[in-house]
Image (cartoon, rainbow, N blue to C red; front, top):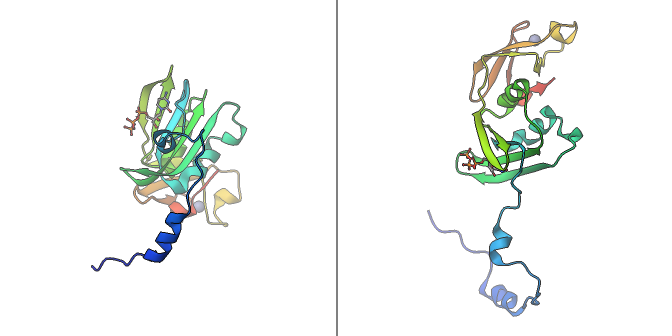
Length: 181
Ligand code: CTP
Ligand code: ZN
């Protein structure tokens, strides 16, 4: 393939070169500027390898809006494993199994790191369950689960990309249609 022509003409480049930036004494060192600024946490949970489009779903699942400790959310970070990813660090919080299961539905490649005294004490690779009980809302408005007090139940038909099927009305749903209860 032919190389793309650079947009900047040599003339504009020359003009640009003439504009000299003012030197500021307190400017951070180049190294410090490039460093990713998400502090390590002392105690709590780090959820890593979250697909970027699931970032705020995880925030919702963990009800981070009402979290009292430090919460750091970083998204659109480059990742060797999944292209782009998000990391969420929650100080002073440990996750319940139910929360981990919910995360697995929206972020099947996520890793949950339990941090104690600044060290990773445990690293849990989330696992998409075969059956999802009472976590996802059925997208079919006439489904019995949307009209009576019945817990939803879905079977995982395919894990990646996620495809689930309602036990009651047999409606199939992909990851786009998934709404967490
Ligand atoms: N972390 C943190 N605070 C600590 C220790 C670790 O916030 N006190 C974060 C790291 O920044 C990283 C995650 O927890 O995002 C997991 O840490 P670690 O296992 O050391 O990193 P990796 O080896 O890169 O993890 P993986 O192999 O799961 O990609
Ligand atoms: Zn249904």
